[in-house]
Amino acid sequence: MIKLATIAGSDASGGAGLEADLKTFEEYGLYGMAAVTVIAAMDPDNNWAHKVFPVSEDALRAQLETIFKGVGPSAVKTGMLGTPYALELSREYIETYKIKNYVLDPVMVCKGAGEALNPELNAALAEKLLPLARVVTPNLFEAEQLSGIKNIDTIETMKAAAEIIYKKGGQNVFVKGGAKLPGQSKAIDVFFDGEKFEIVEAALIKTKWNHGSGCTVAAAICAGLAWGLSPLESVLRAKKFITESLAHSFALNTWVGPGNLSSWRNAFGEQVQRA
Ligand code: PXL
Image 1 (cartoon, protein in one colour):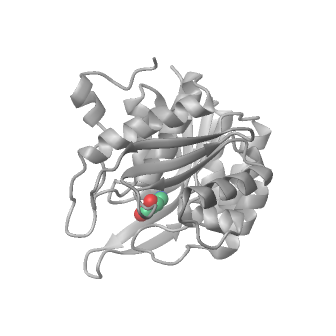
Image 2 (cartoon, rainbow, N blue to C red):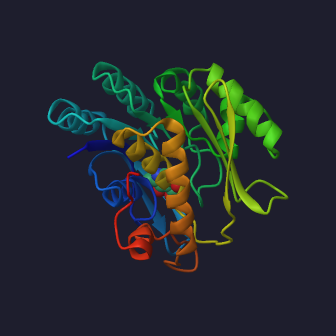
Image 3 (spheres, rainbow, N blue to C red):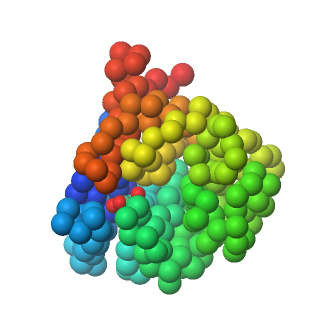
């Protein structure tokens, strides 16, 4: 059994964070472990406003010992870190245990939270985690923060950002335009491996119920790498997985809804296949 781990926030609503990661790993037929960095809860009496409760440094380190020393993951993903020590500990364990298949989802905002969660963490993330990442998966906002480019709203500016983020240390950069790139009739992302750009296109699924998509895509890429796929192959598989999932997305309430991660299984009668 291939074992992999996520270091991420818990989303009490179940659509994003480590809950999305574990569901994705399961759909890929892999065994998932999770270290919780923060607990995110949403207030039904206040328009689903997010509250984030950090897990203590001791508790996080203890979880990382369990996962890295006690088991040994063959691939790791990080999501919402939320504190400087979560970032430092992630780096320490990924480095010490020489994790090659590390996917960095540079979570900087979550829907409903509005502003960037911890602007001061973004610089540290670029400096300390980016150089370890086999694949980094910024959305347009995160790509702006990581690259310093102000308005990323075209394929050309996505490419320019990917190049800068690559130069800052990400070995493979996947800039997700998705449904957010203006004026497109497809969902468009840009992949860059330092030599070649790949424009990744898929059907544009118009849905409001896309909560957890970023987490899911990064987890799916992580699972692909753990299978032994190349970074580009992992990205293409992840894109199919999320597109299928979004095509079957659903509402949890008036505010939020996730994709349906099991829709692949339902559509094809099997787990996500390797080949
Ligand atoms: O989708 C970003 C995200 C990541 N991680 C956690 C979250 C969210 C958004 O709600 O709650 C734990």
